[in-house]
Length: 480
Image (cartoon, rainbow, N blue to C red):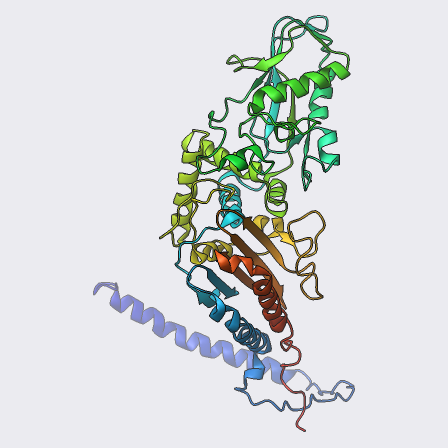
């Protein structure tokens, strides 16, 4: 604020500046007059062709060709998928989205049995909680060797690695329809023990799976699932999915892992006097050797592309350990539900009893699964981890093989038989820079006719792909 005492002084200062500015202007004018006039010479120019006038009016939709092309593709997709939506009965659901918006839905809030489509949620939460670069570590601990001899027991400590495997297991197909593709080498761990200078162990090799609880099977798993390859015993220390070369399955994964590791040490000339078994390692035991898994982003590909049930269940327990400091199924599933709520995904009607989808007690809605897909993308760790149509070794190896879908459609399948049929499919289809997210979960008799439904969905996706390009809809270059 200018005060009354300072006002006159300021006024006098401003008045003095006016003539000074005028004099400065006159001086500059006189200097310019004294200099010889400059003759302006136009530079040599090359005649340029003026662009032809655009035929499209200024406010034409052609001025935004990319948006116009995307809208046209969305319209084609919506009209093409409408017959499929109309055919879905009250036992099943459908949700199709285009970029960031829902496009076509049918019974989106109906609670249905998802089968292995549940693995999409397990993978998404695992990536969010643990991070795509997270790795599992398996260690061997025990007394330090003296002149190559360990006096006492050594412990093989499980870190929750679901793909810890011997070479024979990754190379043969008798024990698995789809062998591990991102396996962690148990042989490398045995070699590390040799590199530590160990030549003899006077005690035993004991498997330690105490990172997780002792629940081996979710309560919703039927007896036939527990004894089949689809549902092996769950623990924090598992080698070869607890399978032997003769395809026998162990219900004690820590013990069978220790036995397998003992065999590898024996092959390398390390004498172990006491055999193998299971037990918790003493707190503070020295680490003799260790091996790390591939990053979680690759393990998620293992989970989704091959539909690895054991990997899903072990991930649930790792989520529980990270969030609630307890490696248990209930803690992991609660963390998954809480994460869905925090993402704004609708959870009404959602009930999770395992992480793999093998249980008939699981309940999911197409709206919930579509929400998870919409939050992610076809290029993030989960989207990139999905099987691709026609991809060898994946659950989509023999599906959507026609041109335009093969190698492009990314999806997760789900199947359950007896006593109730379930067939599900969720994933992405990228077309001209736009992302189509789709979820189709068929329950009951509708699941028996899934082939027709998949065919209709594939045709609708191709119809969207056949829409006009942005270049074709760009502004016209001249008036015709």
